[in-house]
Image (cartoon, rainbow, N blue to C red; front, side, top):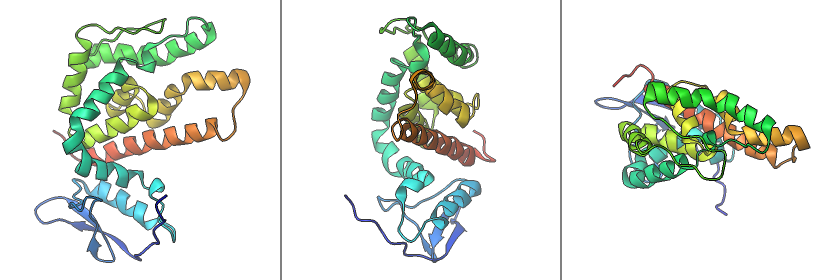
Length: 240
């Protein structure tokens, strides 16, 4: 286990970079990414949010409480080199997306799933051009045009947007949910609730496993909320 790092700075500030963009500085020294690259942020809003993460750190640094820093570092250091791997991971998730399965043996759960996911699937088909199948068994086979369209959508995302999509997809086990958040169709709270439709049904029926369900729920909410906030701040005042 890596030893904790003591907080080594007092003042956190936002700086404009030469040419364009922003960064943050700790006691006047610009922060670099873990790979020692320039931490260049496109929007001032994202820079101030990141500065707040660093400002709120206690005497011993807690990287697990810095989701924006994680997403930014991933966007700069990792996505440019592992983008194809991330895309394939999300395509695999799409081909087993929880939003596309219905629990036919449990009618009450199936009703919840339909109420939660049917509007998202209709929106994807009508507004995004991504028509997906729904399965009542363990096998899911989407229309032939679904995967090419999904790849097209991922190709349209830049490295920063892809990092957020990847985090949300991994956390929710649903490419459908992550696309809905990215496009502003649902908010982070609704996304986390949707991702836990089956779990919540089981909790309602049998009760929660303390420190099990609670921890899973917390991690899911953090990953989705931080990714949604990251996208909002990254896109603030900017359009393609």
